[in-house]
Image (cartoon, rainbow, N blue to C red; front, side, top):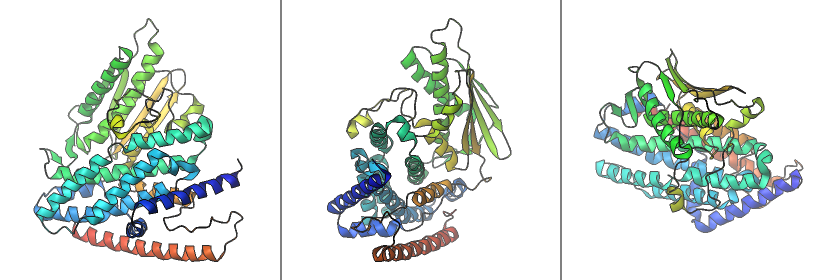
Length: 450
């Protein structure tokens, strides 16, 4: 199929999907999603969350709920607009449509909720947030199944050569991390444990988190292989800093799991004892760096760029070809095969200003460097918007009121295009001004704007 035919096919698919969405939701809801999708999202950093949540009084709860009541529909509308405009027919995949509908349902629930004026309103709103949080719990495997269908159509090599898909997934999952962090923080802050501000532990000990991740990863390795290499940890057990322990556990678990699997695969038929995986924790002025080092044989240099792409794995995929939500929720955790672990771990690291790097020596082993930004030394939460903007620019992003005729592929601009661009710019400017003013007032009022 030529590039011209493929683009036409994608445009026709997108128009069909738009019609389907219009058939399932009222026009007023569609217009509301459209309006919100042009508003700017408000960045929220770790320091703002800590400062705001350090005084859990009724006024703070109400202000937080009011912020989320206004902010979450904007974020959800952005995601709906993205999911409606995915290239290469990804938007038409059944599981992607299910994900889109989840975001639409959550958007409608939030927009239907009345203004929050007192603690009774806030309690009811918190219950709604819990339901939304649970509704989206299976989004990652559902999206993975949709993307797996696209990979099957294009093949392994062809799928890797679709950078716009991987850019979209980066932005989509970064946004998901942000939405779940905001909801989880608001709900948890009302019942914070000692030493916590919501989900944020004031003094999280990375050595302790590392040992917990090691136990989970080794138990998983034991279940799959019947054995597991040893793991050694080097670092000050009393060193602590403020961070989200669940995020740190997620990242360390993924890195340690990969190293255990690599070592076990390399030495399972050997008479010699497998060398241990080493976890080294170092405190720096800007970052806390955790190195996970193994002697599992390493990664070929040609394969290193692919480890950050989605659905890339040397293990067989645990995802069923078809599954309903109940089956997805009951799918057990497995050692490898999703092809999502490293890209998602890097997003978790980057969400609060850190990073994840992998250096490998083929024939020997791999070193993964997890950089976690120390509170106050970075501009948090900026990448979510960076990924979104880059994906939109790359893919000539079109929103829900796209016209009935396809874009002229010969580059000619007709009256229709001029009218659409004028509407787009007007909407964009209105949304930008609204977002700027909202961020200004919030930064003055409750410290939520970054």
